[in-house]
Length: 229
Image 1 (spheres, one colour):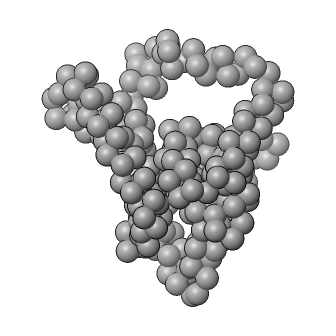
Image 2: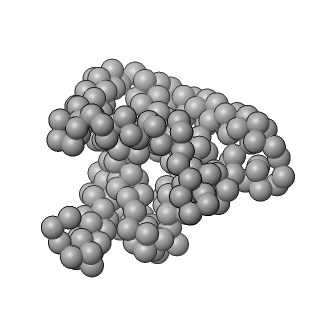
Image 3: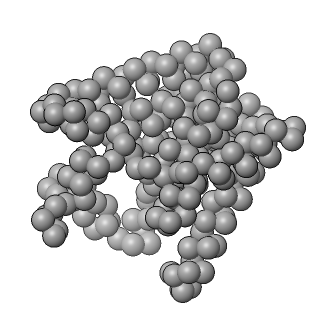
């Protein structure tokens, strides 16, 4: 925040892509990680992430890096997964993946990491920040004719939005989203329980399918899933 907007955007995006490069190198120790990184960099979602100044590349780095390290360094892997609490719609399925894989140490580290970050944010910025966050979602405020929650439900990439745009009533769109989340959870559980070699790609797709809010830059996970096939 102390930097000019341009420098802040540049450094934050470079840091995210550096984190993704590190995660992909852990996932694919041979030179194929360079192919994965180049493909992710060229994906439209990557440029959308830069233009929006978003953090989807960081989310991808945390998921890929956490899953890549879970066998060798379970505590670090879990700590990385726990950081996903900053974007909570993407956290449940990676936690479920650790449970399905029987990675109890990683799962414990993930919970500790998530709780510690929540407590730290409350200490640094005050508990009112969390109370306001819950209030916005329970009682959305209308600004300029539409609140952000309604805007997301109308124009994002989630299952519920797609069903709504087909003309379905809100209850049906919500039911479709819940069903998608259940299906995504089932595939995640099966993939990590059985040790499916494509489990990281499956998780990337499942995280997107289950999320009730999904933007175009978040599709970097879909690009990675395709590249991992």
